[in-house]
Length: 312
Image (cartoon, rainbow, N blue to C red; front, top):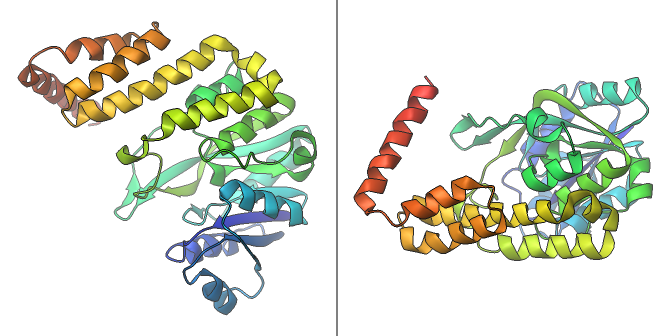
């Protein structure tokens, strides 16, 4: 049996769609566990009125990691599948993942590709997970590139007995931390097919306004790795950690750059280059912040035209 764990916090706007996507699965051997992380909306009533077979548990608000850990601890299935309350699965998601587990008992985790969508429909965002994640040092690839969407993941429950539960002290990258720990000791497989719909909302990390606390979160994650997961730290190495800092500083700087705040972006591009000088893109953007704004606007327009041509 598969235990489907859905943590939720004030998601009554979406959670019925998430549950319905589970009920529409071609594989029917599952249980649905809702962990309500202190919601103050109508979530509890919606589930009680519409989904009598769902196992619903309410807890004080402690964050998504705590909610997932509660779900794992009470799950009765041999496999754990995670679904965020604002995402949706396509009908064959569980069946196709389960087939990979049954074909190879050494596999500890299977994740899939995914679509992105918002209130306007599907978004054309190409990630190429196999190229970014599945070649070379997979632990390092996840640390640098992430892209393992939690709602795509299924894990053998026995794996958690070995690697432990989610880090409840992490507000960002708690999922990447878990996937890295699993990959260090287990085989993982990518089902190279988009089988979930990942919702992009105003609160998503993919939005421009979400980088404010990212540096602090990265630092905290690295501290936890250094202090608690020495095997992962050794697997990553100091160069990879500096590269991660470089990425984050670049993202913050690029946010300002897109808003035409070139002076504000300068410091971030400089830090990005200092942390990882091999990222020549950081230096090029840093240099561009010193040229007249009208020149930058012309370069931006040329880039937009080029990308538009490439997508034709």
